[in-house]
Each structure stands twice: as C-alpha cells, then as structure tokens.
Image 1 (cartoon, rainbow, N blue to C red):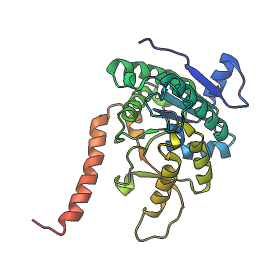
Image 2: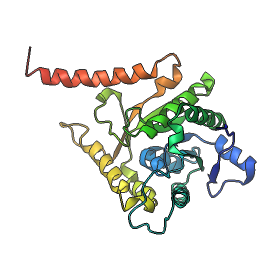
Image 3: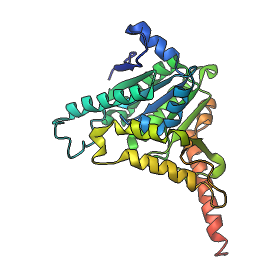
Image 4: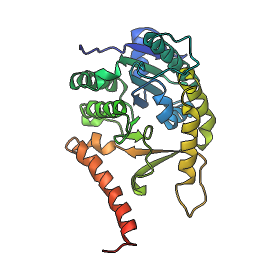
Length: 290
C-alpha cells in the first residue's frame, strides 16, 4: 500500500476557492477537525464543533472520513443500491450533503476499506495520511472516536489519529482532542474526567445532519438514537440537581496523549477504566463489608 499525500476525495464548502491552491487554503483555515471511521460518524460525534463553527466566522470545520463505508449494510428499502461500489458512492454523496448543511469548510474521504485500516501496514498508511492533513490544518480542536468504543474500526481510527498528532512539532499540536461516544457511551467515566458539551440549541441541526444518510436510516435510526443519547446525557448527569441543559455530548479528554508523547496510551486507558472499577466496587462494597 502506498502513502498518498493528497486527499483522495475533497468536497469544499460552497464559498471555497477551487483547485489545489483552494484546497490548501481551506485546510489551512481549519480550526476544528473531526477524524472518523465512516460516513455519518462526523455527524454522530462532532455536533459541538460543527455548531460552534457555524456560529463563529473565525472558525472553520473540516471532517476526515477514513474508510469507504462499504462494510455497512444498506437499508432494506434502498433497492437502488445494487453493489458495494454503489453504496460507497451513495454514502459519499450523503456525506457531501451533510457537509453543505453543516457549513463545513471541507470534508475529505480517504476511502480505505475497513479491513485495511485494521492491519499494521494499513494503519501506518493511515497515520501518514492523517499526519499530512494535520500538518496542513493545524487545528485547535480535534474530535474523534473514544478508545473504549466497541467498534474495532473506530478504535483503529482513534489510535491512528493519536499517532499522527504526536508526530507534529509540540507547538503545532491541537489544544484539545476529545474522544466522543458512539458504539459505547461514556457515562461510566468518572464525573471529573468527563467533557460535557452543551448542544441544547443544536438538536434540530443534529437531526438534520444525520437525516441526510438515508442509506442507513431505514435499518438503524442513528438520528433518533443520537438525539436520545444527548437528551439522556443531559438528564442523567446528576440525580440531585435540576437539568441545566436539554442535550449534551459526553466525551473523553485525550489531550494528554498528544501533549505528552511519553504517556503510554494503553496505561492511560487502563488507569481510567481502573478508576471507574474502584468507584463501582467501593460503592457496592460499602454494603458488603468484608
């Protein structure tokens, strides 16, 4: 597998200049970057960044989709999708529509088969591509999957993202990188380690963005599920205090993994899981003292 230094697919925002120089200008203006596994994952995990960039003319959002999305089963009613290749094209078209609705500066498709990024060789190619894009973007904020996600491709992508960002010079690394819940929620994180992002004013946008992925929604209502999770996050934040939001995205702050290259990523995750384990066992053990 050969490393590519150019995005395989590039969809600029409506006001972006054309050509290679235009692509470079769009990427250089990026303040918020999402790096995800599949088409529709941007919209699933990065609503806070999308919404913030829509509201602030000094911010610009870029999304990177690492795989082609061919591994997902199309909705049963999507009979016009006759082959995996047609599904890939359909999902990319849906991704571009979401980018237009969300006002992204750009969305980039690296179009890797999921199976490739799960191999050591394919992962290294992905790391090189993400490093190249991170050098061009130099974002302040990065949104990606969380390390405890149960989807192996999601975990492969966040691992490649951390490795790529660690290769940047220390002064060029993002201020913050967060791993957001998707195929495993993060309510188990100790409260003082949660990143809680209020998107109460953007629930309709979240539904509209995910609603563009018609090839997926008949089989699985990701739009409603994501909205329900955000609402549950808001309500179940505390049993003793009134809700201070109606929709909240919960994430895991992974910034230390990028800012401190000596920090072992496996130990970082293990220590966080162990803090949860101790919290749960101590609460339960109070009633069964040994």
